Image 1 (cartoon, rainbow, N blue to C red):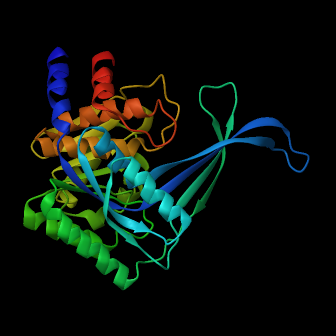
Image 2 (cartoon, helix red, strand yellow):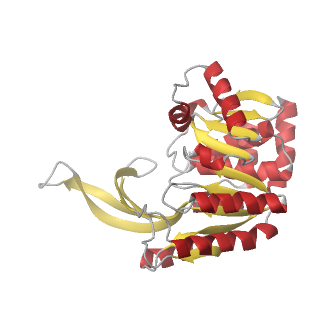
Image 3 (cartoon, rainbow, N blue to C red):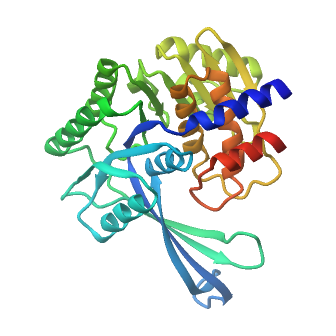
Length: 333
């Protein structure tokens, strides 16, 4: 175990100094917090007195934030609308250290905004009562799609890897994904994706992540036993011509299959302090991508990602992990 720990300590500093192009659906996450004072007379719900409101970049911006938090540079490619939420999201990207050089303004589309209504009380974190999503899932307009492809083709040559974060709200169209793959291959860059179930679209990508439910739906069968996960990972590796497959399993950690490395299940690094799982998958793909770019094998990349995910679920909302926090997790868990 000490040998594994020492190896992970070696790789943590290597996650810094990389450049990653993050392509995908950019969201603005809005949190409205209030103090519960009484029950409403109009419906069986609490009445909240407003306390505060804050914003966090979400969707594809979350893996980009994790890249920056670990000392690397992230450039975002995605869409915002010509609205107040778009302006706010661009400001949040800037504050997080994310380069917005690839962001396109779509005059016919609203900025995807997810508003969470939270009640503060005696618990450590506020409790979410409701969520309102403002989202446009239409296919991309041809002109807008062309602008995204042009940004990708221009930026790929100056990064070390391309990470697609597909939240299925339009940005990761077939044409955009093919532009990512062909441009990255031409420049010899690593391609990673959090596919959110759309696995066939990412055939040929180096690193592909999906969760248990997505893979069960794709393969049309349940994953109940360790053998099921191993066979599923091996099938995905073969069918998608990938170099590594990561299957996230919630409280059961994650599984990884790598070309020439075989299969491994990693139990969750942290199972006792889980407060909010929002964005944990974004952390997994961001850390695994940086580790693969640095030269780590698939298992080492998955180990680091597993510890990082264990850290961010201790925080509220889309959270990130720093090198110091990741080192603490490796040392103590």
